Length: 346
Figure 1 (cartoon, rainbow, N blue to C red):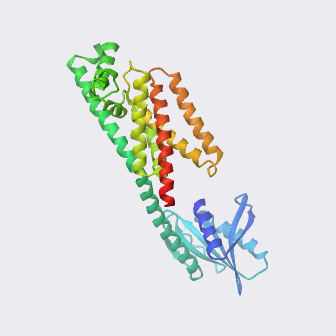
Figure 2: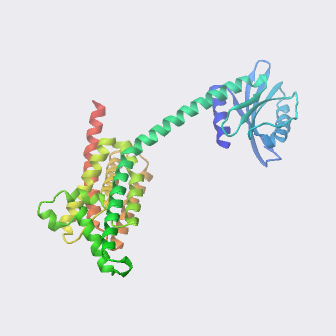
Figure 3: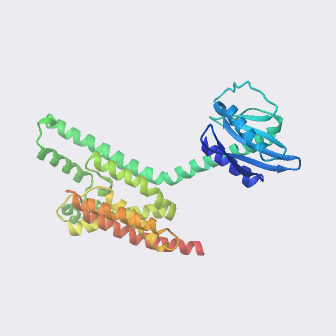
């Protein structure tokens, strides 16, 4: 309700030549705002109130307006919960009764007709704005949601395969941890994990497919949440096509560095690509450092350093993949943004 008050008063001030006055309310124990417009025959005053407080709000506003020493018309916008039941009538105030749930007009006095028209125009613009915001929201989420969906589907298929293998060996409760880990690793390799021995035999596609595999529910949940947060930001800056190029390239550069520096590990996960997106954000922030607040750049650096530190502190994390993704994302982000700026200038 406070947001509606603020927005509607802003419209009256900015578009309808009102100005604001305020007075102290003994009932609410705070300052109350009142919109006023100068007319040839006095002042047109607008007060927004809720139905449960309208009587006391009217009395306090009425007493305050009298101190201004001008002829006046007091018009109250009363926000009501559905059907309006207040039967107290006075000729000293005009009312526009509005349903606080959807801001439709329930009833109004003739003097409030201008307010009714302003309100309906405001509501219509708000509906259009909300529709545009939803479209914008989904537009920037679609590529990210597709990537997340692909990862989740592959993870589910993998878990079904793992379950079937365990079931074929008997009760999973009787299997040792070593056997369970061996089954998990075997399925990961089958589905396309980064495994140097097979890459050396020509299966170079593993440098990309490994980025769509995850070893546990926590692993995929953390990575997909990170992708959900960072992905749309990259798309807003670079566009959908360059976003996907940055992500895929970062996944590959992450795997390449892992392949070179960590040849004996089986690696999976989208974190290399996500670090690449962070690298692209960093490249953008550095190139636009004169236009961005220093807090944005410092916060971004903190996020990157914290994530790198966490990776170095926890076992079974492929930090080379993170670093490779970060470097690849920063480089491709820098080049992509340079190209984007040239296209905009031309």
